[in-house]
Image 1 (cartoon, rainbow, N blue to C red):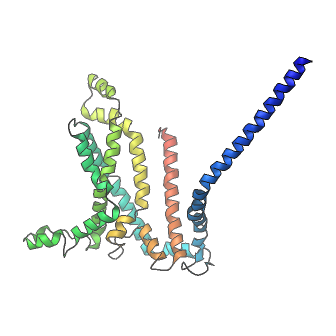
Image 2 (image 1 turned 180 degrees about the vertical axis):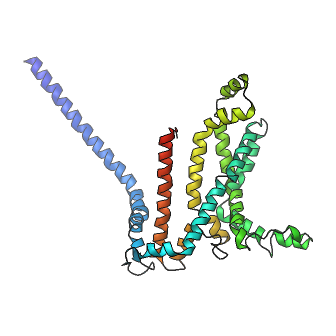
Image 3 (image 1 turned 135 degrees about the vertical axis):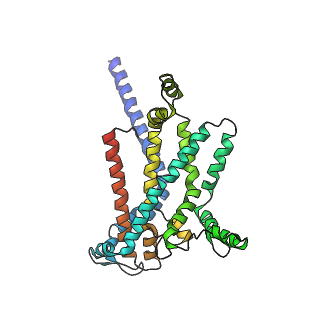
Length: 313
């Protein structure tokens, strides 16, 4: 009988403790929700609701102020007939091809050389990275001044009798985009150098030494030993570069706002101008949704290639 009473008391105390713990956990959950609620509300108002609206607005005629009027797929039909949309898309493609070739290769070479530096490597890293910490607005204004034919470097070259060295910069549509690209490379090049250098310091040097013993030359070591170890980093940099290139906006807007004659127009600058000065927020949403589909396609293609090749990224 005494044993039964003891067991009853033990089970009762366990049940009581369990109920107390449940109440404490419930209280902790409410406290947690209380702290995240302000941020959650801001996220819903600033991100979730606009994201949902962006799926509806492309099918409307809306100037940003009045009530949106549903017009079906008229905006998409107009977008496929709009020459500026294709000009902007081709500029985004040029932007992408430029960034995944010249700056990336140059950054790889610089990082590879810095890897061999023993003294002063930190100073070199800081020097290359210094341009990356400058805001896009400041960097754009610097290069806008450099290209300015009336007060920039061209003005002083002409004044010194070296007019043949003048760089047309932003005044000629045929080279305006590449002038902006060069400024953007100057701004963001250092970030790729630091990423690649950090990845290079994590490579297994014993594999390179083993390849040397086996008689491999520098090119063979670079191609078959060194680069495969950098593949995860190179893949991530390439993916982020492609996505960033199709969303290029800040440097273009600061330096040219898409001009002259849409020669530097990108999809981002075009739908921004449509929604602000053009008062065509509905059509701008359709162009923006088209850009979103491109980004989704790139991510799906990357995931497919990654799965097929078995990349550990």
